[in-house]
Length: 367
Image (cartoon, rainbow, N blue to C red):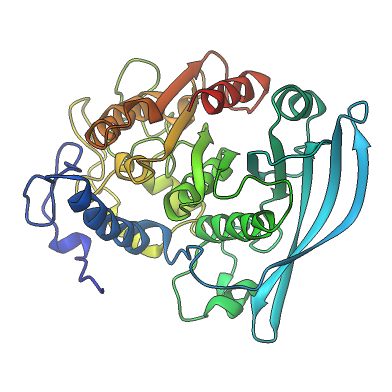
């Protein structure tokens, strides 16, 4: 089904967070069946206004994997592998490389796919997750097939040429796509618990993890860390701990992120810059947007979502993250899974350390 989405000039202002449990005609969503139908519409809305085209796992990319190197680690209690994951259509084939650490024993294990910056492997985290708790970690460098370079011509990338040069393909959606192809490979292994994946990432990779969690139903737990603007933050309301300041110098705004990183999201998002910079504490930024980031969070439901935040990470909008968390929660309540959404704050700044991983693992153990 195709939808006719309006331009910013055709939309009426919404000076608060848009209601998510209302259908296109403004009627209250009555049950889970109606929500499922509405969620399909909302996903297409997010593709149009924010992510660009995002492929789910319904298209067969003929994924295969080759283990290039394998060794026993952590006192022979785990196996660490380098894997070449190859995929494509017809004669066009591309590869990405992943590092996988898994328990060194028989059985199937829940795999955490980690959209990561370079050199992200951490032995302490591995020992906690893999040896002590029986998870596997599959991480990959996010830039392999879609470089994170502002102003880059994404259409010239081999990945975009393969998917379709005429499509609106942007970096965050492409990083999520790579995560889906890694899951395709994991689905065929003897150690992965099928259809039961956890996806995580930090900062811009947290934005990609949220995108992957929305569009890949095989992901059962989505855990963005310090993902901020375009992730688990908020477009309309900006603030540090406990207050709304609308200070675009201290908290990242939609305008700042789309100007600085135009390759991350669809150009359709550029329509929603604000012209009046005299924001009061009660005014809402970007009020022509027909959605806000609580929509992204709610579209993970009924699967699980944990948002990891830091009070000292003002740029990532901790107060806005709390606002959209509270606004997404009614969808999880409506679907009968209130335990499947949580937000955890810690002291400190913009990083992804052991404290965050312990929160991730504790949440996954529970849900």
